[in-house]
Amino acid sequence: MCNKIIDNEVKFIISRFKETSNINPLVKDLTHLKTYSIDDNQTLEIDDAISLERISNQTKLWIHIASPSSYFEYQSAVDMHARKLISTVYLSTKTYYMLPEILIKYVISLSDKEERESLSLGVIFNEDGTVSSSEIVRSLIKVDFRLNYTDADELIDYAPKEEEDLSIISTILQRRKCWRKKLGAIEILESYGKIIVEDNIPKLKIIDPTLSRQLISEAMILYGNIISNFTKVNNIPVPYRVQERIDKLTKPKINEQDNQVLNNFLLKKTLGKSYYSLNPLPHSSLGLTSYLHATSPIRRYADLLVNYQLNRYLTNKDLISKEEVELIIQKINNQGIQNIMRFREDQKFWLSKWFENNSVNQYQVLLLYWLNRYKNICILYFLDYNFSTICNLKSKVNINVGENLKVRNTINNNNDIVYFELI
Image (cartoon, rainbow, N blue to C red; front, side, top):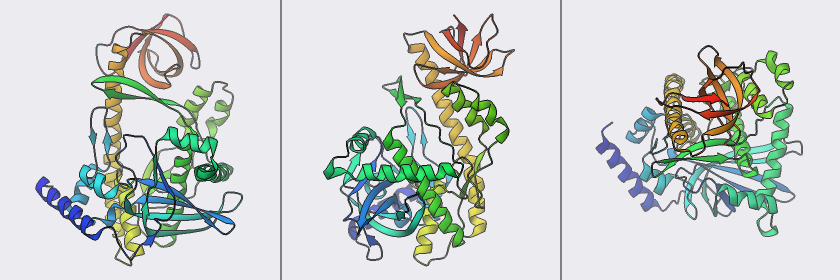
């Protein structure tokens, strides 16, 4: 797609956006709600926000999702470019955005203090976490508070009387999670290390599963579940997110393990393959009979496709055909794998640089898995840093999975694997 065509289209979208001043009489005005977005400080693609509405003796949870399809059309130059990329790719030194960066920043993202169109889901719950009623509307919202996860955690923990909404939302969604667990959902709460690069120096950032991260995760699962039920009932062709049934046979072995890190690793190995499908099949680990990705339309094309279809359905326009959606799903599945591999290769490259730069060359590790005993290829978990990686581990003694070890970084003559020896 010619960059000039895309640039001209972007300029037109921004110009039209400024002229209309966001006033659309066909959308529901929810700007009166106190609305929060929770994300990292540096995040540009702000896809989601949440609100709490009090209606007599009930509370209604609102989840607002950015609506790119309110600003550009399917088959436009911007859309075709996004479809080629399939998703934003986050590399350590550069981000390749699915949508034009200027469009994200000034028109689509749910920026604080700015009115934005969104697709909003309103939900009232029963005491047991089931849904009493729900509605999906095209809306106009305004984010009052853009919070990072630390700020959000404090509001949830302390629940000050003047700002107690997040704490109430957290309680509601914890109840919803309990309902999913009764249906067979599996939750793996663990910290994990991620390589970030600043001034060409790799650093390790440890991300903990705090209450605010759990809140956002559960809100997004809720949105994906209810929207999937809506599209299923109304015969709207969309890409559903499917996960095959869990391997029940290995569960007893997992439960015998005392080590939580190893237990989580083995549990993840039993989970079925996840993929996109035109058919609304179950998502096993979430405990749901149907589910889809709809909460990241700025960064994932599968979500953007759902965004198009919802907006078309709600405005009585022709839907994108089942045949077209099926062809796009094939591309999403194929290109999506390539994007994931690109991210993993980038992380692996910078992780090897991190080991090279690290003044510590001895590590406490846990042996998670032997990939090839004869070639000394295994997966080690680095206990002080909360990450695992494929390594070459040289040892003169036999080592079993689940053993805690002390290892020394030896040589690193390529970026494919890091070498260690047992101390």
